[in-house]
Image (cartoon, rainbow, N blue to C red; front, top):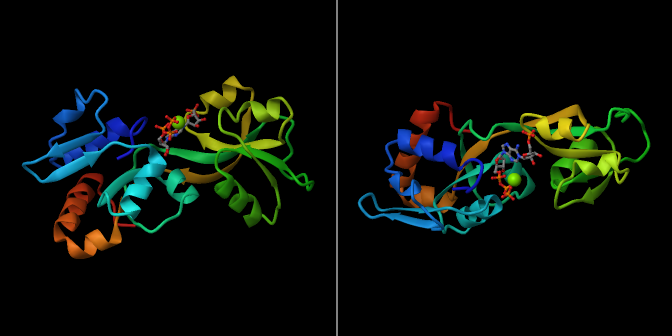
Length: 204
Ligand code: PRT
Ligand code: MG
């Protein structure tokens, strides 16, 4: 599972599905937790690593944001939309930005794939400027025309004097699975069913 922002809501879902998550209350700096009674092992890692662990079968199941899955496509199966970690990808900029301008735009982002695919889907070829830290300042200081970033409350944009011009796609956390694990271990499907009963949507 992904540590950080979606940790609490993930634990809540797991508890509702009947897992004993008491170890999370005083987890300290531990990243591996073993439930010997139920023969389960929980790993707490950074988002892109969740996909990697599941892909390599180190973890049978993983919880990770669709933003991460989109940016790091790999060999895993997407099983459930957990409806937590809700936010969206959007194009934002300073108020004078003109999205219909036909010049080749410069876009700052931590998500080059989603940004490129979005503009390409509109037949626009853009120059992506990859930024590691706060992308919000890029249009303000004139580095780029706009940004593509995750927006949740919109507070970060407002604080930097930016506005949303276009919504790209909804983002939520997903349950992913290692495909070989599902085939060879029927208990994995039972775990997925328990989680589906809690989140109450169809498998994706
Ligand atoms: O931040 P860190 O480097 O530690 O790790 P991370 O970014 O890999 O993980 P984390 O814990 O920050 O995010 C985990 C997952 O939460 C992401 O992969 C998303 O699926 C989901 N999520 C939900 C978000 C947000 N909401 C969100 N608001 N991820 C990031 N943000 C950031 C975003 O960068 C934005 O600029 O929060 C900023 C503020 O959002 P506003 O609009 O509420 O101001
Ligand atoms: Mg973050």
